Image (cartoon, rainbow, N blue to C red; front, top):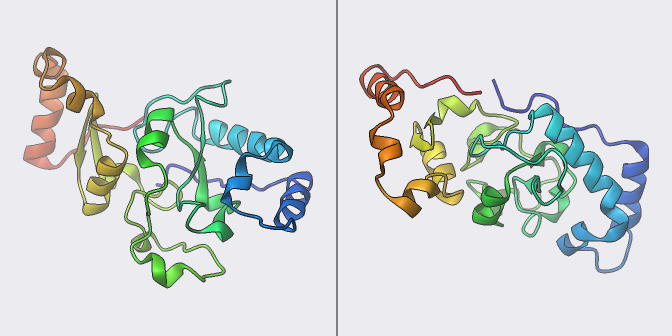
Length: 201
């Protein structure tokens, strides 16, 4: 089951603001942060905070319940490279600030050149290099053991890489938290012996 089953249906007021913005001269991805689009961003952020239950779709960590900085709106396909998908509901979610910084504007499509002029948002999971929260089941691609992330597919491995999901261990190395966590060791053994990943929240 995908992480997000209910993409946002934007209000008429937000759709009107978006159309007005798109009609301006030199409209680009940099307009996302414009003051007049704040109500649109707020509506998007609140919707995905609720349907994601304040959980980042990439690391499964927390996103802020109140601060906008603590729950940035994520464009799964980067808006800087695919402007026509900037307000596409299935291209949006919220993520934690760290995943937002690490993923940045990295390309997530397998063949971006083939979809560059596409009118409709690609809905086939196989067209994405990363775990797509609207189309993929997280546990099919990534097994999470406390702060350790293990790839279960190429897509999971690429998501771990571009979001630097193992950032805790990259920063602190092999530490007591990993070595002394008995439940974590048991989960890891079950995963490597039987392929049974731990239950995700």
